[in-house]
Length: 297
Image (cartoon, rainbow, N blue to C red; front, side):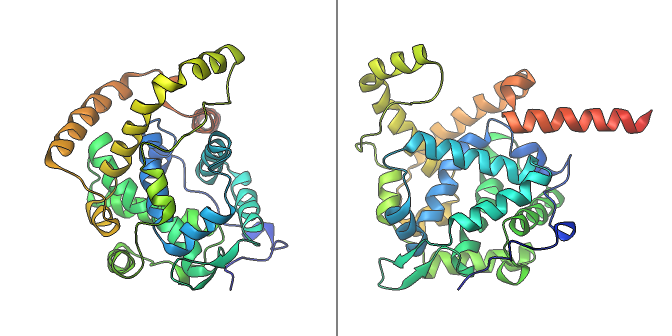
């Protein structure tokens, strides 16, 4: 079973990434998106098939920083990559061709089975929709619908057929609730992603002096970072998804999350662009501004 489109497809018909100035254009490259990613990734691997694929085939345990860097680069290309977006979609489908096995319920799975591949992509929308309420501002009805349309565009870039994804918000929420009821569980990978006592090696990216300093301080830095990772992962996950997985969340934690996000909402918008936006977003925004100025001359 596979939703993959032929690699030799007509390039003229390749799906385009979301448009400049859209909702995703504003959200995906903002540094606040980094706080949303752990919730989306954890929700993805709460699906038994996806969790089994990551458990058996991913290098997230042995190379967590490299894995995270590659995932972030891929996500940025989907939105800001222009012609590279479709190429990245083909690369991902090729990468997942051989990922298959048996999940925790004894069912055979393949990473590119439409139901599995679509779920991985689908989780981004409810996390964006929920987390922006805390970190940015609640989306209007029009913005929410635009976000879903743009998320469908990204799905096409990734090779997901329209028939495999709900085509409207009205269709999405029943699909999402059914997945939470029938499929989602606390997989082994979920438990690892929210654990505070699982060892993680110090960062191995960046300037050598910084890496050496982090390595020396890692025994002190890691415990609070692990607690924060758990806190932000569970806190920014949609409540019904959190409940389906069985992740506890208290009123006190909710109040703490709201205070933290209130500070983020004030600080991030006043940051200079080089600090507020990730690299691909900065470059795409600059290129778009040049194109607009050129067209207006």
